[in-house]
Length: 97
Image (tube, rainbow, N blue to C red; front, side, top):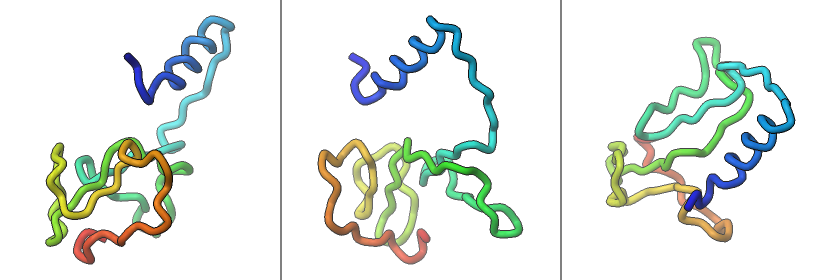
């Protein structure tokens, strides 16, 4: 029922049961995507976060147009489609970089 997020729920529930608390920082991780934006660095070029979390898919047309909530883009990277890492992954369209 929980699929690929089962371990996250298990960790959260286990921590709550034994009283482990965590300090949250809004700059710890980011989850950029073609759907929610790709800004990963600030005005100085420094990264905005410590961890880049691949949560959402990145999908574009050959023209570099973000494809939101579809499976129709000609270029796509989504961790849920891979059971084994590919030896190579074609770069996204130039205008999407």
